[in-house]
Each structure stands twice: as C-alpha cells, then as structure tokens.
Length: 72
View (spheres, rainbow, N blue to C red):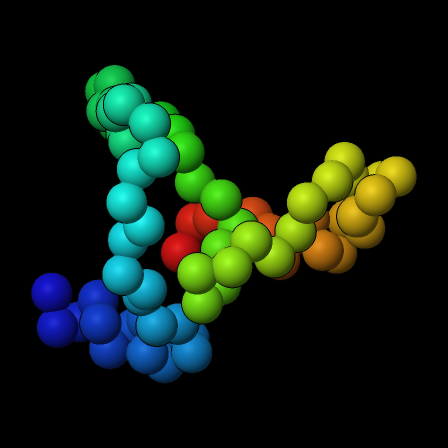
C-alpha cells in the first residue's frame, strides 16, 4: 500500500474522501479481469467541475480533465 501512496504522491495526486452515495446503487462490479464503475462525477474539493456535452459545451481537453477527476 505504501508504494501506491508514494506513486500517487509522485504524480501529484491526493485521493479525496469518497463522496456519500446520493442513491441506492452498487459503486462497482467486477467481471473477470474488468471492473465497471458507476456514479463517478468530476468533483474537485467537493464541487462539480465540468458539465456539458463534449464538443458543443465543453472541449475535448476539459473532457480529459473531467475523466481524470472521475478516475481519481
């Protein structure tokens, strides 16, 4: 676990406290060697950062940033 924390730190990533679910759903499902994740939003410091449709409301660059926040 320490190696993971060190790697995240070297990448400048600090894991936030997970947000409480707003509905009754399963956060993830593992199927074979894949994990399907649900309910992730591009939150930073508890605030939604990106809203809109890629290409018309937000840029591809911002969509990449949003995806990164969702993954974190």
